Length: 297
Ligand code: PEP
Ligand code: MG
Image 1 (cartoon, rainbow, N blue to C red):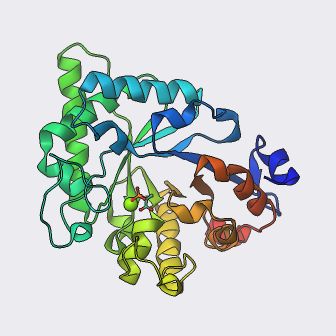
Image 2 (image 1 turned 180 degrees about the horizontal axis):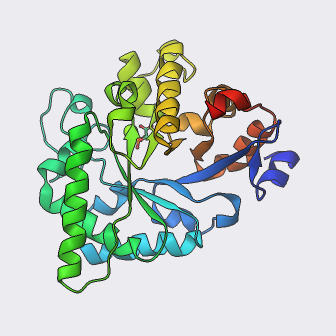
Image 3 (image 1 turned 90 degrees about the horizontal axis):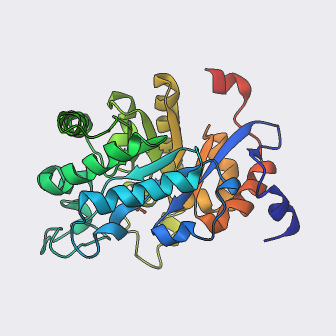
């Protein structure tokens, strides 16, 4: 980390023209927070909960304990927890469907959760219980059509009602969605989401028809490809029109070279790998935000 990035680490991010930008962190494993100070960020923008499921579906109590720890670590900052995103590049023995000819286009993310209701409801119950402890936000992966968000919200409300009927403290958290399928980016304003977070890894893969693990096609997978940037701009515009937050939590947010184009697209919230916070704050400080008139409109 160079000296300037180190200085910027604990300060809130600002563009060169003085616009405040939120920088949150992505968490892939609970152990990652052990040596991390919450003071370097504005909260957790993505928790990939797959780590909890590596030994099979975890019990509600174990999940609740992990979600509680994340909230305690964040000291009042928002904590975004994504529901299970199994399938595709994240197969889970005994949970995901075997033998799909193309798992990236198969039963993954929310599609799987809506089929494996017992696993999903357990996770929603743990999340609703943890939501009573602090500013927890729930994020749904791989959403393609508005009906999926309607179904998830209904299950979440039912989980809260069931907990209350059992005398268990619980609260309905904000419910947002990943925008990582082009259909969702194109139609973002039609989805009943309390916030959007752009998953550029999958959005690039599905827009450019290049699998995220393919080597040698780098010229097709640059984040600033005009088609990808257009989908990002549309998502930012949908969030602004609906008055909800739009963040970007894919790897693109952690790459300093994309800070300027993302700010120019109107993005004001980045969620990045913990190790990237300093260099992203530096890149933001050297870039300009989208013009004030465009932001207000
Ligand atoms: C993404 O697709 O950009 C994303 C953040 O989710 P994941 O990398 O976990 O698929
Ligand atoms: Mg993804």
